[in-house]
Amino acid sequence: MDLSQPQGENYANPKTCFFHVLFKAAALAFYILSALFFDNFVIIFVVTVLLAALDFWVVKNVSGRILVGLRWWNEINDVGESVWKFECLDQESLSRMNKKDSWLFWWTLYLTAIFWIVLGIFSLIRFQADYLLVIGVCLTLSIANIVGFTKCRKDAKKQIQQFASQTLASRVSSTIQSAFSVV
Image (cartoon, rainbow, N blue to C red; front, side, top):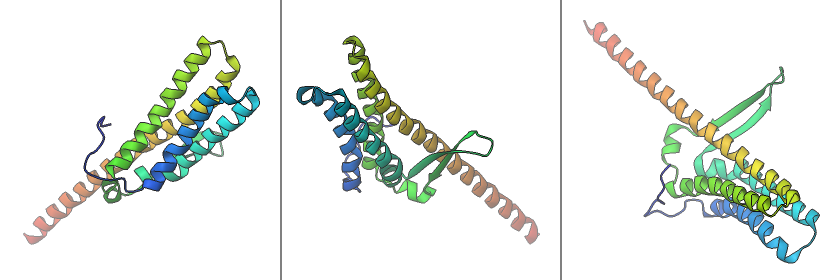
């Protein structure tokens, strides 16, 4: 993953980028600022987890598809085993994805989890076990998206490599066949 932000191009999907960041920022901001306005743990828990759940849904079902061309889900098969399912755009469409959108997607995905971890450390230091529950739920949702999209990206790269290998093999085979058919 490239550390520097791509230069010279605008966001191709500014509304999607906005909502990709909105719920992450809203959950973190509400959690951090709620101590100033509320003294009720239940309100803090419900609103923060609701915002984190909205973020999870938006990332998994909307911004992941639009910003990076990836989609994942998990199913339980007939045997009761967990099976990961992945979808990605074709190679041509993936190569046309906006670099700035992709950069924003991946960085905010990872930074959100880092922020929740830091907040968890602060809760541990302050001996606030109940707030660790809020952070644990939010961090779990964040990490689920990280794992899902990382596995999906690896699967997409593997599919692209297999497609390239098959295309190369078929071209070599057809070239050899046409060479022998001429003779």
